[in-house]
Length: 391
Image 1 (cartoon, rainbow, N blue to C red):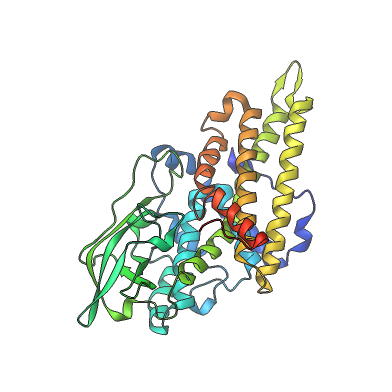
Image 2: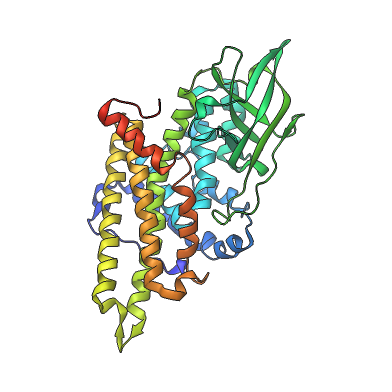
């Protein structure tokens, strides 16, 4: 059913986009329709990640769209990056996560904080999809409070020893390189590049997920892993490093969630026009129209928020608090749209013949990762009052 998707632009926001934006969107939309929509229900049903899509994601420029071309990126602006994430999540949140992690959480910190040698070694390979990356910040006992991390790196002769673990890491079981954040002996957070195959480093898969079933998730376990000095990102110390990466990823999520909402809305609209009860399409009943009208209203508001956030990002004016507001609003919107769409489809809404229940389950994770719904509320609260609720 997703292959029949028609986009919706109630406030003609396309008029605010450049030709490059529209061309990129068309290319990614076609790729999702041809490569993702026909297979994603099956992969999700089997809880298997379609890892063969990594090459295709690279070919459409989904890895680091707003990073420079010479470092493996797409050379686009931040709105272009957001549009690509939106189209990918229309296909599946897990597919968007594959790209978002690779570009925003792996390529971005290497580009921003890495040495020139690190950039040359990793970025072109990550951009082409020949290497897969993951990002290690969350720990088993430290999620919303990452500054309390226990993973440590200590000096050992002319090298270092890395010890600890990370949890809920997208791409971990298949990653060739991990960007890991740990505390050094001075209690400063540093970024480390850890390659698969290093002694003491393992990536067990997390199984049994009811959400993001087409995305592969795991742990990162470090048992006195020996780290050379040239594996440490030299350009940053402190929580600024990982938090700046999260801002980049959260921005993409604020756009991406709109794609899931649009897919659910489009499915519900088409179904309501075709489904007849009492000798008329259910789209003609007041309560169905109420649902549809409220859905497109909320989608339109989210589209405007994302577009404005993108213009601020392009001008270098976007703040982390603004990203939190957008991520929180747009993901909740998408979750509510998915629930209303499921209601319109009735019993068919839970069937894998339609994408709604898959989006609904995925969004239950998206509303929690990269900062929970409540934490983003408190970030906004801190920003508008000047008083932190975290301490």
